[in-house]
Image (tube, rainbow, N blue to C red):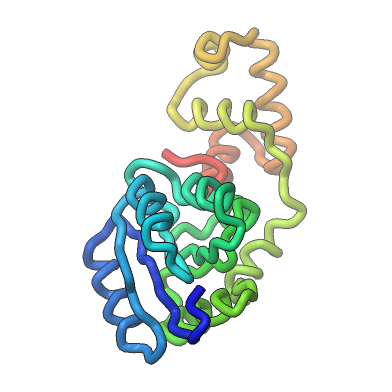
Amino acid sequence: MDTNGHIRVLIVDDHPVVREGLNAIISSEPGLEVIGEAGNGTAAIESYFRLRPDVMLLDLLLPDLSGVEVIKRICAESSAAQIIVLTSMGGDEEIYRALEGGARGYLFKDMVRKELIQAIRSVYDGRRFVPAQVGARLAENLPRPGLTPREIEVLQLIAAGMRNKEIAYKLSLSEATVNAHIKHILEKLNASDRTHAVTTALRRGFIKL
């Protein structure tokens, strides 16, 4: 960390236009400097440990590794990492995973410039930054359903169009076991059927197409 209050920022996003726009906003702010950019998760991890930024801005949707995986890998080796998620992904499960992984802030891309700068300065000072809009997204979906990794795997295969028998074969399970998993999934997501479960899981960020 720069003890003189000069905040060094690393931008990670797979869209060059987004990186360019963020660079322009941050670079025009006194005391902030963009020291690097990365367009995928692998480059993000390499750039972090090479450049050691004070703050990293990170999108969750990257072409190789997920943003959450990037957060976990960096935070596993650097407990001082200050990472802010800046993404269009607003499912409550995505927010939970990022914060639990070690992110110190979470912003949606449609938030205004003032909030971005405030988030960078707050996280740099050692505080979390979870604005009201993000907190409301979490609160409206409490309690958090405890889907197991196997249930998420089953949900992903349902979303891919597989029938129960096909899922059982794919996962080397009995069809009765798959049926039991689906029953638990419907209960946890308060879903009326398989389609409802998939749409709910997609909206909340448990699975992706």
